[in-house]
Image 1 (cartoon, rainbow, N blue to C red):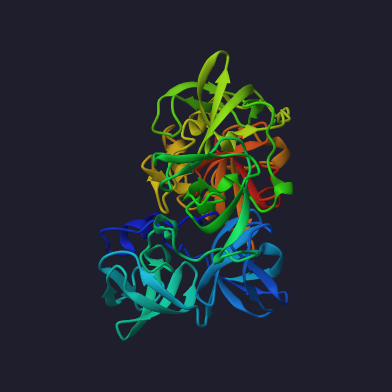
Image 2 (image 1 turned 90 degrees about the vertical axis):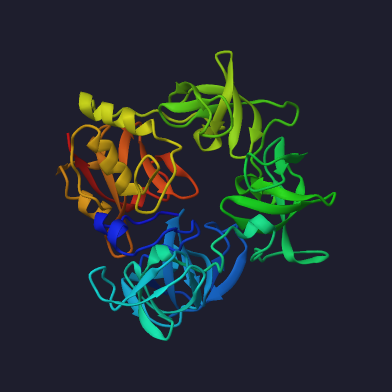
Length: 452
């Protein structure tokens, strides 16, 4: 899902906190459901389980965007609704359920503004009654007071921790599995998918799951699925390797442990191990063929030019990407693009603007700052930097701004050529390279700006 950029001063002055839980609930306004009996799903896809039904006129809180779906809160429950059934606005009052404070000594203010008076403070885990939304702020009742709390300091999870870490939490509803009312059937897609003891690639391997194997899905959190295999083992697999039905499997040749994949994106890093903490062996450009020999969580083991390493599965395709021609870039623009892709794999942090964690506009500001170029802080304001260029004339180093809802610009990235851009996407992916013509982005381009 996408996190909308916030003003620079908001991060440092909005609230006095010592910690911020990772399971925060960034708030981007509200939306009204425009269709009757609209499915609320467990993930941003029509193949995800239906967890609730929304009716025309229902008002939901918007927490993010992914794959033409918005992450929403309906009656205190989080889920996903297709963009086609939502009409957006900045604020509304209503009953949005019970949420929880995610930091220490969090300020509750008299209005949705960091300059407004503090009416009370709340501690981590304190329940609050959410009674309205004003932009990126929640209107709440807490400690006998009514006031406003900034979105990052509110969570609809009582502990702010991963539900999957204990194998509990809200199970995705759908086709029931015999003997379990809280699970549904999913299928492994890919060969040699590893069942792990915990939701991390550093956790121990319990067993190997083969392509098409049936599992019971118990819960999903932070990109990991807690499952039960057909032989009774319980553990975690990366959610990317689960399919709703056997027909939707990503096929790999059954007669071989390896297959030919192609690099998606330029300057994609090949690492010595399956995480961004491992050393970089080499970099590969768009369309380079590799032999995929194994899978480790969200990483593929590959061999290229006789060298073995690991590439994030986000950057490997089973079909060769089309490499399109683009206008010649200025030397500095190309340098900026080359530098930006070196940060692929760095973490996403809401409000972040340095390598310890970026949000989308913080990433842009940081990269251009390396070249002595000052940009505005938010995606909306960065759409005013430089000068406008037509989408057909994009060059590496240009920035691309994306709009949501009623035209509000809430996301930004840096064009790198070949129809691709690099951006700090969300907390699940961090900094990634994405095809500009993908369904999630192509119709949301609001501005293309050249700064060099």
